[in-house]
Structures are given as C-alpha cells and as structure tokens.
Length: 295
Image (tube, rainbow, N blue to C red):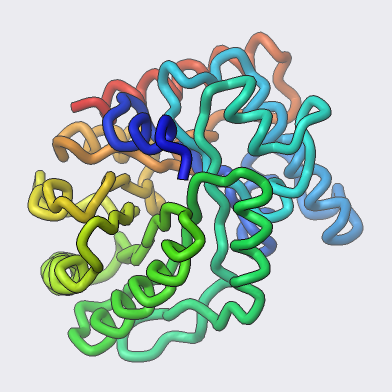
C-alpha cells in the first residue's frame, strides 16, 4: 500500500467521488446526464458513453486533489484509459487523486431484511489486477432494508470476511453496508449496524485498518465511536438517494465523517452543456460537498 496515499486518505481534507456505476445503475446515471436508453444499442455502447461521461468529469479543471481525496472506479473504468493513461495512473499522477475499484457483483434477493452480496468467484483475479493497476483500495456494497438482527449480523460478517481477503492483497477495503433511507426501521437498523461493526472491528488483527461507507444517520454524530476506532482509517458517507442539498446538510452535522457521493456529486450535469457550464456546475457541487465534508 502506498504510504503517501495512506497518509492522505487518513488525514487529508476532502471527499471521495464515487464514479463506479455498474451495469444495473449505469442507465439511470446516463439518463440523469441526458442520455436516454434509446441512445445506445447494447451494453458496449452504454459503457462507452458512461466512460465518456466519467472522463469528462475526471478531466475537468474542477476535479482536483485540493477538494477530492479519492475516486471509486467501476472495474471497466480501471481497465480503460484517460488521456492515454490507465485511469488509475491518470488520477494519481495527473490529479493527485487516490484510485479505488468497486469489486462486488451486485446483490442477492432480499432475505432477513437485507440483501447480501452475490458470490465473487473471480475476486482474487480482480484483486490481482487491481494491484497491477495501482489501485489503493476497493469498495463493495450490500443493502439493509429492515432492522433485523440476524440479517444485519450476516450482512456485516460478509462484508468483514471479504474485507479480510482484500487486506491480504495490501489493498484498503471500503465496506459499504448501506441502509435504505426509506426503511421504516432505519433508526433500529442503524443501532444494530453500529453494534455489529464495532464487534467485528475488535476481531480484526492488530495493525489492520479498513474504511467504511455508511448511510447518513438520523442522529447527528451517531458513528463517532466508529470514526474514532483505531482500526478504521476513515468513515465516508453515501448520499443514498438524498438530494445534494439534503446530503450536504446531513453530512455537515456529522463531524469527522467525509463524503463518498455519486448522484449528489453529478446532480445537474448534462451532456448538452458547454464545457464552461459543465465545469462551473461541477465546481459548485464539489465546493458544496467539500465544505460539508471538512466539518
């Protein structure tokens, strides 16, 4: 693990840009950007278009390390080039931004109020490639729909089990057990989730550290104990369906928690905008998120 990147990620001011939409979420991201489904014939054209969108964002003068610590990439983006360089090399060498890659393959059907991650039979191959592509770390998402103790226990244990495999490759895992912001038992789910996270953190080997990506909580500074834990490098928040205004407001009330926003970051961007307009809107979005992230 790059020691300079480790210091920046642990102590730097800024947030993580999430540009890791996969096959299931890419059509929504493109539609929000002004590219409807009938604009592409197949997955290849769809992924080409989303790479153009991501490239436009990452090459923007507004997208720089003074506000952005890291960027989470989709696996295909990791393997593609930006400006004649592999995406991870472009981010770090040109922008000073730390690259991560999404490793999960989607979710299983709901059971016990949660959706666990699908099996990842090619995980070791992907992690080997991530090291070769100079990724700093990884990210994987599971989902919590209800405050069900058994489901949340299984969800968190799965995240930590895979996280331990990732640590063996000297990569920094971001565990993301997202809670549905519309869940009627969101507060109960948050209580159960925090307890399970703390229990599993204590089981990690001494000297190990992970990162966590968590839904913005109902109670301000709810995850303060997790943020302060010696085995946690950083806790970042997901926007989870909140508008940028809502997400930024909630983030500012949770001290020590930074952001890893996707939809809230790209809100308002359009394929039809001039470069000047696009860059201005992106710059304002980044500034708003940054100011909330450094509280």
